Image (tube, rainbow, N blue to C red; front, top):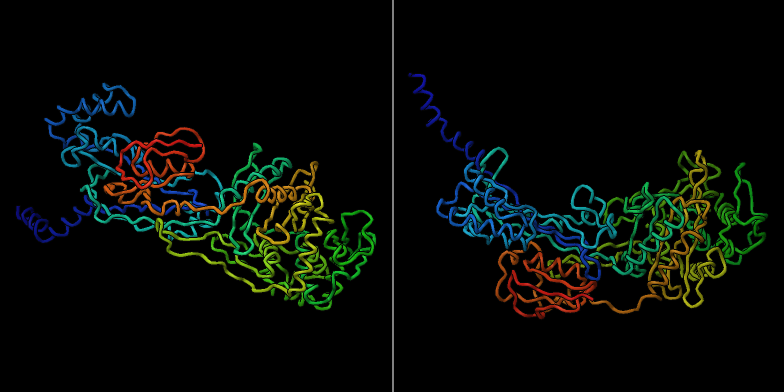
Length: 637
């Protein structure tokens, strides 16, 4: 007896506070409420990624007063039936059985949109709230991609997969700040909110405006896809960059599945390094010209299209060779023998001079772009153990070096940009709704990669490659292109035999460059073709044509300007749970139907939509006062 009395005193008084704290800790817990991530937009205001709120609604049936339950259970069942479709008797039996079992966590509906949740919480009984109506609400957010898989690997994801994309690299801006909500444990693994209000409300993340242009992205994606399908290729990449700013206007990375379809597997343009083949010849030509070791008129004897260096043959694709030609023609005809002779004869006694010249032009260095996942390029050093008598000659025509496609494009973009090398940019602005928090300005990597004299010469050479050289099949007399073909042999040591990487990189229009572009297609089916001019060149031509010929030229107005005089309703904002009376209707004119519906439904409106395309009519005029739960009619054309 004395032992029991002692134990009671010990538990109740001596250790009571500790046990009470542990009981509260086990029964009541603070849960984090994830903030809605900021949206990711294209440069023209189309929604690429957004956080969509989803709601799970449950009910503590045991807490509802008997009088209220008996009076309104039939009304609640009818409301449930009208919204979700099951018979009234099903719901009535469902609620009564739960009442008998004193169920404190009965599922009413899950995965509801905001507009559905607003309807459900006004149902009989539930409208009485947490303590009388037993209402239990769990809110979460899911990431939605209104435009599907466009540039999926560049956008990234809001989890571990997004580390090499915009979602991961700009997560500090996008993620916002979590909120806090107290919950009480009611059963094994089940918790319900204690209060209707949050202890700390979450703060939504900022929006990221990318450099992607939806129209150019669509053009580039489909041009690449068509060539991949035509040549049954393994995978491919296309990147379109704005010359002056370095803004990436389109990027597509497609890989072939076993069924023959294509999807965004990896961001090959940023991650994958490979031997570039003949597109590297421009780097060697710029180096030799800028060091004044040759001129474009220097005669190079390509002999009969084949030479031997240390027992290894270098062969031109043109049978019989080109004989004696100028250095300019070496690049135009893409002579392997000619480039090998130019580099070995002028740098053979001091190969380090060639390597240093490449480094001075940022060739062989990372671009340090804003999204993660960029691979380190490879340029061998004469002092390294892997350097041998073949290294310099092989480098001359694009072997033994490795670059990502974006790194190769950046060099060609510098040629188009009058020698100024700018860093590729994927993001234009960070916004808090319609307020610009920061703007991303062009970043110069190298102010001038070579002399103006050299620039003028190589710019003329790249035009002649298309007009008279290996890419004359894509020549357009009314719209001048400039660039270089590339055909690189790979896997020649494997049982499956030699495979190829076909590429074309350049810019357009040639006289006043606006965009640079690279198209790279890996392992095309050899029975259909494999030369860069045949496989990658036509895709480059189609992209250039459609951007500058097939589509009208105009200055686009961003959606943010459209909203200048109207309140933007952002999913997950406090405004969505209680819209003030002076809220204004946004101007939805010419907004894509997909974006308009997402904006309105996430803001608590019911939308009735007719047609396809962009908004041509809205039932509530821009600037008019609006209230949630209103029906808004849209007509799309």
